[in-house]
Length: 251
Ligand code: SAM
Ligand code: CA
Image (tube, rainbow, N blue to C red; front, side, top):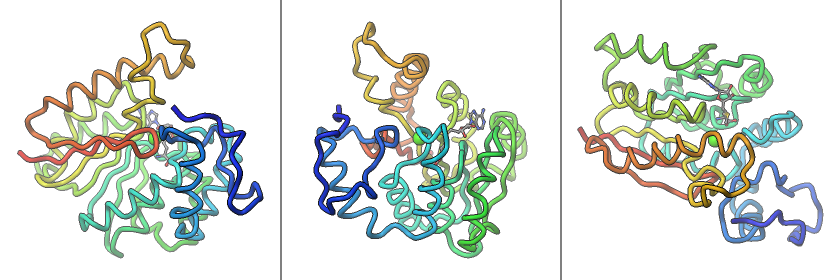
């Protein structure tokens, strides 16, 4: 587990580039190593609009929920590598991962973005508009599950998504998976976020965990086990951010 990093010296000697403890999504062995990645490879390449959105989001009382800059960079490259065009995101918050996706898509690319909270999406929307990528996004306010149920009923939607990023209510991930496996293309990817859940997946059952960490832990453990034995997918769990499990549909 990472330390809180209060002892970390900065290459640039100031605190402008210092990541917050709350925004620290890394499970790397030291805070210094994570800071090194951010300062060396992430921040110098981060588009100005993503930096702006990250800084706006840092002031939000729920800033803990945002996707970290290194994971944003990863998602952006992944989407380009797989030439994704039709994508979905469940769990938008202020839109950092959404912007990373929108920037990576071609001009006619699409994102169906869902969140129960529109207010937070609207915080990031001016930045997304200024970046010239808002036309790629269709935002639906409300719980994602009923929308997915409706989509699955229409066979025309089956096998149409190249990439789906799931970053919402962890207790529903397996319910999402049942529907998303129908909607993603064979050869397409679903990314489930936070599958290492603050490192709590390996904590003893009586470990003193934050309330929300404790509450969702069993759901994350159950998801990880289920994905590992699902014959319809190949998986790769990466320790990026708080852990992301990529599932490639094979049948
Ligand atoms: N991907 C976002 C980012 O890059 O900032 C972070 C998403 S945040 C961790 C989780 C989001 O899921 C919250 O904005 C929350 O409102 C949303 N959410 C929670 N339950 C949901 C549901 N049933 N359907 C859709 N969104 C939901
Ligand atoms: Ca997340």
